[in-house]
Image 1 (cartoon, rainbow, N blue to C red):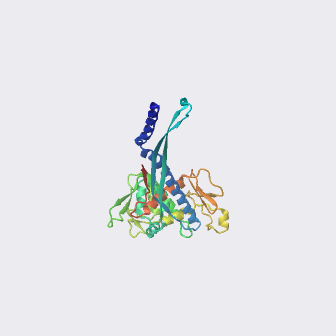
Image 2 (spheres, rainbow, N blue to C red; image 1 turned 90 degrees about the vertical axis):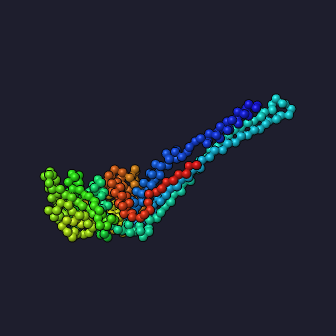
Image 3 (cartoon, helix red, strand yellow; image 1 turned 120 degrees about the horizontal axis):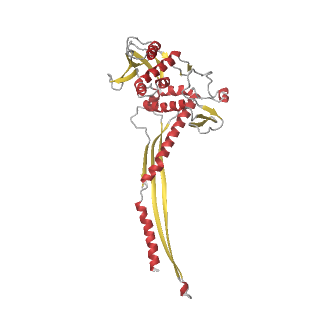
Length: 360
């Protein structure tokens, strides 16, 4: 009997002792990092898509950011032991001692997620101030396609107007599309490039665009001449300073009139397909034929039923709106919009969500 009691007691000690040797922190990283990453990414796409749809309906966009994610775990073990006896006074042979050993383990997950509505005066200024040309051109120089990015972010180049929206649809000049497509070819060939120099104001560095015209293939030479003609550039100048504005003041300048984030989103919202019933009852304005000679940067479909396997989908005004998973142009535009939103944010606080996991 003593041997049986000792054996059960040792089992209990082993169960309780083993709990102190396990580390749950590494496992929580495996369990939490990717799910939180996916959740933040998916909800950003949904929020952005919802705001694009709102703008198409003439509604106000609203932004709520995930400012922090703090997750705490409590991990515990408990053990118990019992001893009892069945005693029969008239028959000592049937007297029995009963032993029992048990244990329990608990895991409590307490996430604390902080949300920050974006409505301050600083945030409004960031959304309505034009994006500096240096930020856009640095993206192009780092490899972003010039035609795609300029179509999104630029209102005009040297007075040549882009398609856009400012209360009514702006058709744009045909020369604009020709110019940015030629810039894309020049970018791919390496015969046109941008470089940043220290300016008089450290906050606004000078950006120079260089165009080569010697020792280049004849076909590319024609493209570069086309850029000069379309943008009304001086044929004798090979390096141009990029300035903000409608028109240049000197022959060695190129004037970029850039958009702010709200105008970019308004431009993208033109490609939201509105249900005919909503156009008929006036919920959304009817802008007529919005077709263009170039592929749309974004296409948002609509329907009464939820889509199957979308890139992102939201419900608004009793209808579903979504971006197709196979629409590369739309997914690329959403990616650049996220970058541009970050570039427009001049606040000192880091908006990146912080994830802290207490694992004890």
